[in-house]
Length: 115
Image 1 (cartoon, rainbow, N blue to C red):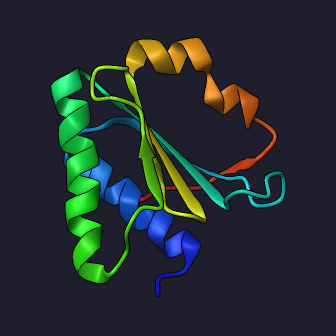
Image 2: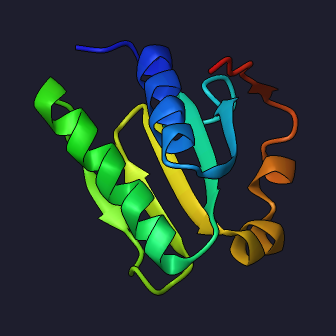
Image 3: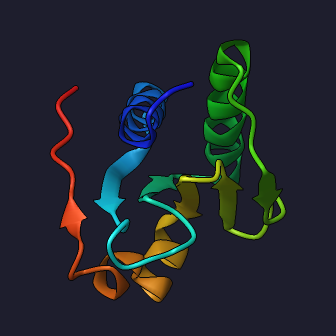
């Protein structure tokens, strides 16, 4: 089983490989009881968002890593993938600006991502 931090960084790389915009990994472990890491990424279109979500699922399944749940319709502008200790938010740029999750979790550490 993968450690939560390792999984979070792996997902960030998968999203970046598929050209997600502004991939951010936030360590929320000290502030939240529901997860350790929060990943936020933007897609330029609903089609790209679908491709990002599908790619994460397709690449993690062979490793035996499955989501607890996936919330949000393909057309809603925001898909949340719950992998337990790692929660992934794939959003349109507009939704991301509107909800500004980075500000909400602003007192948490953002991980350095080196691709």
